[in-house]
Length: 618
Ligand code: SF4
Ligand code: SF4
Image (cartoon, rainbow, N blue to C red; front, side):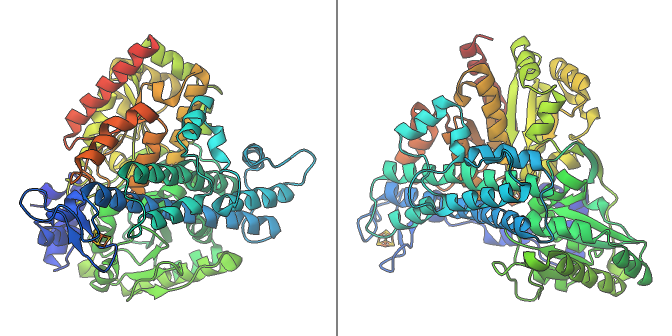
């Protein structure tokens, strides 16, 4: 039964244990939820105003319009772009916090500018002069300029200027260049209010504009400034999966998204005083491990072990060996407080934006960052002695991995330019590249699609880059290792050997999808072409969150063919479905496809890559 739910043995073992311990998990709740409502699944349920809820009958003689007269096209488009708004808001609010942290670093706080060169580089895009200026002064100006992009009252968001000119032209001509990051999100909320926009094409266009404000705005700011504050990731070795928990150490899981907290926790976990305290309670030390995207942030920069992805968050607690789970924002299942209550685990919330009843709330504030980080870790240390030995069972499964592939690292490995990569593509050693991003979803077998798709692609000489929970899935399967070259086709194997890189490159967290945009942009720039002409594709195999909808949309609007492994709630409108899967290609050069079978998806990607290769004449 558990093997039907996940391909990961460690997770399957913990699901068996959960059953024995009488603990309900997301999979159990998903089962109870079936069959799920067809109106919601196809996107034709509306409860935007209190005349509703309304629903459109797609098969029978029931209503074809809501009470206000909105038809399926309008309802589906409104619902979809509200998903984009929420996703873009989540990423962008994260970016804003990071920009704010840079401002604090400039004024003197526990944070500092770790990468002055990267700061100077991004200062350029914000029009901040750097010559002869003190680094703190530059940091302050860059932070202010970045913060302005969230709410500027005139002008346009700065970062899309980084895109190749052809792309900028498309965005300008189609009026989707974001004016300010927040404004586009607010406009979605306005435009989708009852009785405002009734044109599905116009609605989707605004969705695109907000999504671009995420990918080429909020997320890109988050990534860049995180690099400035916490370091540009470089290749580093680590381990992945539930087996990274240690029996004799204080196990602390950082889960959520923002490196502002987790990076400070990493520093505090090495504090001599705390290590002493851990010994005093009988532990051998502090074992800090990461989950979901905050895990991705700290593994990329510090090699912190990766305990699990989205659907493993409950399973980690079920091991009975997590002494504290520290969470900030996003993708934190409210059920964690219930699962933690079945064991000794202390769940600690830290953000005023994300409280969970039953959790301990220790509010994190950047002004007292280190002190609070120490206090939070102490909760875990003190809780070590409360472990219930008969409930502890850590699965032994874990895999080695090499991570830390920022654009800077990739360019470094290539000798400073994308030329060797382009040469390998032209020579046919590498057919193209694919980005695998996104979450887990109990609608699909946990990690199956991520892993099958990645394996199939590298077998066919397609280089794979990863972010988000896709990275954990491939990491647990051993694909983030140099040895994984053995699973590649001959051309990609040769390139991996030459550059000493795995065929599957971990590029970071969900906001770091912006790194993929920059890499694609570098390739396009080198080839003097547009991103849409490159032999590349994207996939969100097991996506579930609204953030993934925003990510998918900004990839398509950047010219990338993007496959979704789980169907979004759009099938209730033939027009919206056609717009997203066919018509948008004429505008942006990218489009969506839905394919629930990873092998067929791999074929679609390879066919697409082949078409693009032919068009490029290679
Ligand atoms: S906005 Fe229209 S379709 Fe939506 S709930 Fe109100 S009346 Fe119904
Ligand atoms: S990939 Fe999805 S589930 Fe995982 S952390 Fe990112 S948004 Fe959350």
